[in-house]
Image 1 (cartoon, rainbow, N blue to C red):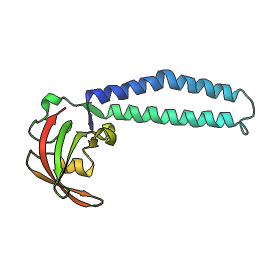
Image 2 (image 1 turned 180 degrees about the vertical axis):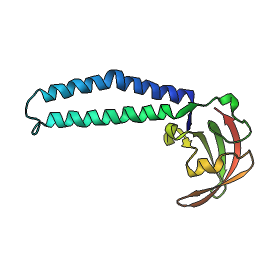
Image 3 (image 1 turned 30 degrees about the vertical axis):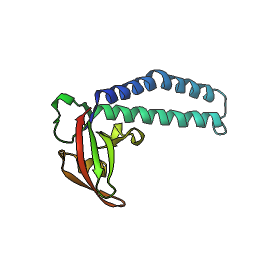
Image 4 (image 1 turned 180 degrees about the horizontal axis):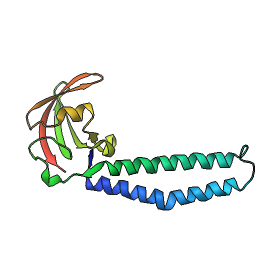
Length: 155
């Protein structure tokens, strides 16, 4: 079971609807057109259309499974004094004395450029359940990070 924010659930639903209603019918038409051109064994257009069809079907099935096994999380039911899903956390790396702000999100919402890390990542998992002032130890490829939580806000 995965938990998603309402925004991300809606984004995935919209992408799925677009693939099913717009992209896949076009892929089917392109495939039929390529098939009509004759000899399929030497038809590069047909092979390309089949590849695109398989890729589109794969993405549709993946998104259907994500939605089937996901629940929208209600932010009102989340603790406000501990790090949890949908928390914005500011912490200090005690070895470098640098402050960082991140958001803890589900793996399907992760976006490092936007400062969103997965709760299943080493840092996300180490921060989960901690309170302001506590120190989390995250095992990362470069070693162990000691992180002191400075503030927690709910998104």
